[in-house]
Length: 316
Image 1 (cartoon, helix red, strand yellow):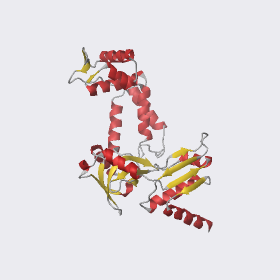
Image 2 (spheres, one colour):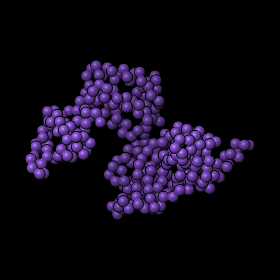
Image 3 (cartoon, one colour):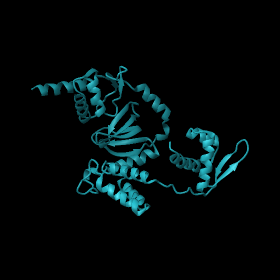
Image 4 (cartoon, helix red, strand yellow):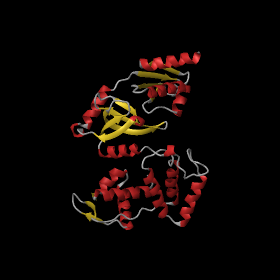
């Protein structure tokens, strides 16, 4: 961690803790005692009001009602922040309106020369999904589902959720993560009915609410039961060309383990369960994408049948 970054992070650490010791700073940032003391003194010079306390339990305290000094960004840091906004502008990300207002506020804090640099970047750097004739234009397909924001707001309060799904049974889940893969948002979760780990397409979710009896579950027990229930019904062996294809694209749940020190052969072990024909079709297409150096050692009967049917249709 660079010194400037460490100082900024250390100021937030101090303000959040209220009271801290030199030893805690050393452990948190993996720095020597002399460096910790030097950083604390530098932060005092920047204006953060600290009170030193002597004695066995001594340390430093931040004065109450004290404000952190303004964090200043370098020109390169501002460009990096702005480019990250540009790169993800048309990526169906939630809180789209908030992102736009945030960018406007950042622009308002900058000098005229810095604003000119960012306007030039906005005109010259175009990312995938950007209309070259109107970079600020948002296609309808770029606007995220408002339910996605509701889901994120819910999980910030509680990870135990009740999902109402379109044309599929409702589920009570513990949400492990929310991720985007191949232009589709997925919920990696534990089904509280059988404690199986599942990946659910967000497109199938019609409504989401915090589970009414969430307080009856203990997260450690839920995760332990999920580990006990986890099974493997699919085993795939990959040659070097299939491994190269795997690195170009692979579904979230497909984790590769190398079988030799030269990383020329690999193995995937996982649990596959298909709640919809769409999921089955995506898996079949991905296995075909891996190519001829893929060997299916074990797979669900439904997947093997789909692969056989596709092969027969291709030969006709």
